[in-house]
Amino acid sequence: MHALEVKDLSRSFRKFKIGPLNLTVEQGSITGLVGANGSGKTTFFRLLMKVLKKDSGQGKVFGKDWSKNEDEWKKQVGYAGELLSGYHFLTIRKLAKLISRWYPAWDHEQFEQLSRRYDIDLDEKYEKCSKGTKKKIDFILSLCHHPSLLLLDEPTAGVDIVSRRKMKEDILTFMEHEEKSVILATHTIDEVHQLCDEIKVLESGKIVHSFNKDDIYESWARIWVSELSDNLKHHPNVLKLETSPPQIVTNHRASIEAVLQTENLTVYQIHRLSLEEVLEYLIDYKKNAL
Ligand SMILES: Nc1ncnc2c1ncn2[C@@H]1O[C@H](COP(=O)(O)OP(=O)(O)OP(=O)(O)O)[C@@H](O)[C@H]1O
Image (cartoon, rainbow, N blue to C red):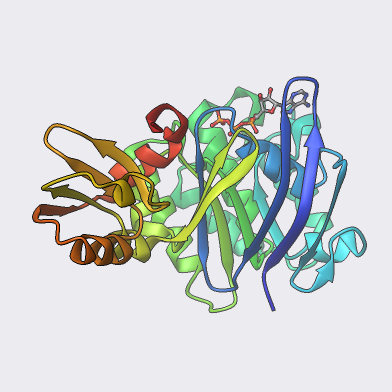
């Protein structure tokens, strides 16, 4: 059973369309959602949580039909986003009390413990807290009903270095139970590097790339060659060509090496691309495309 299955999820606004999105999230995995500002990451979470209405699409959360059983599957999901926008005048303590009524599994002890760990003043009103503190509170509140799927929308944006480290630790602790899953929208490369198993790249509301992080190191490379043959120039796995000196960027090293061998072309150098280079390349794909 998947943690999440989404089929043809879409929503159009006047100037932006998200979807149709199709994706599955395996239990026991962390999926990183990356993409330029405005590519649709937050909108995706809002559609999933039904903060926004979809135009079309279906899905399942832990096998349960997403359009039905809402009360049931929402108990299995923790969303660190903006669900409580109408209640920001409350203190953190009252906010937690309110949320705890919705979740039978609410863990008050964990809430107290995490609040101490992140140095949260429970008697402060949410709306009075700093940007980073709000992020920490959202994170804590998303965890305390013991969800199985955690949706984290840039959880560390504006968060101090120490709390950022603690959040990463807490995400990994959350993942210690095999059936848990996370979708993490982030602009931070070391979070993708340290936390994510799968990566999905969003561009203009569409998932344009989807891959396993470890595959990147095997498949992506910059190769310096003696000549740019026609076969190389038109190969679907050659994503970029440079002429001086002749070199290519590929997302499938093995198939390019086969072409090079068949055509008897000399390889001068091969460099694996780092995760950062690959993501930068994918996120900026249109601009880089020849
Ligand atoms: N309710 C809405 N009405 C009109 N447009 C909307 C609405 N909600 C989202 N959008 C549009 O959807 C697009 C994607 O925004 P979204 O916040 O999902 O991007 P993002 O990838 O999360 O960006 P960032 O990385 O900056 O957080 C934007 O162009 C935004 O204007």
